[in-house]
Amino acid sequence: MRLNCVLVAGGKWHDIDFARMELLKLLGEDERVRVRVFEDYSDVDAIAAADFLVSYTCDVVPTPAQQQTLRDYVKSGGRWLALHGTNSILRFLDDGRIDTPDEAALLMDTLGTTFRAHPPIGPYLVERTQLDHALVAGIDAFEVTDELYLSQTVAPIDVLLDTSFEGDAGRFLYNRWEKQRHPVLYLRRLEQGAVLYLTLGHCRGHHDMQPMLDFYPKVERGAWDLPVYYELLRRALAWARKEL
Image 1: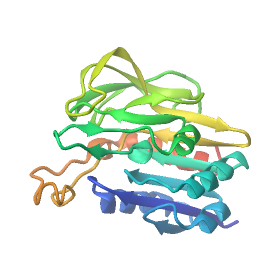
Image 2 (image 1 turned 120 degrees about the vertical axis):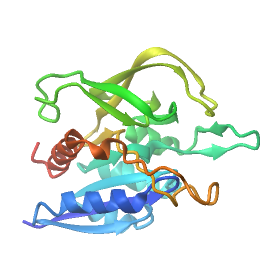
Image 3 (image 1 turned 60 degrees about the vertical axis):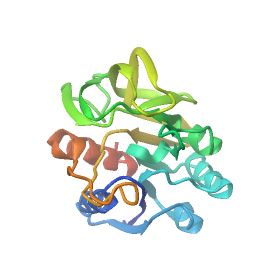
């Protein structure tokens, strides 16, 4: 049986081409899957008709009508695999700081969290919170060098992987964080459907900071360098296909 997927891959400050290609390779491992690719959420008819939805974005903000389509899609039984910066809204202020404002409230409630900040990229330990859930069973604790997402939970979520953080988040307005656990992989159930959110997956190439920087000196691949990340993505896509 054919499965129709919508992949939304677009936004700023990331190597969207790399992430898009890697996700298409993974989606192509199942010969039943046919994919339509978009940079944003504007084709609401395609989203409404999809068997499952995958997003890898940064600072891509749906309109109110598009947010309602996304929410209705999930509520009616759709599954949405949201990756990395899907819950991010960024505003660069004149003083050099970065605001993550309270906008797109319906989107954030559908996703279950709102991105607030991340410390400078560095290593951190990711651990399971549920030992026997099919999405994480057998996944040992692992260290990853990636953006550690510090998000505000705005709706009930079921955390499967998390990490600990205490410290400074650099240029973000939400700067000082007391020690606490932060979700890395979680489920947000909404009536008949659900969102599966995985915060890992930062990537950046030499030309992805324009116009802020003409040339970014270091290619960053984050969790994409780890086999365990691809294992998590494969399980997540199986979940999206309603096989898990």
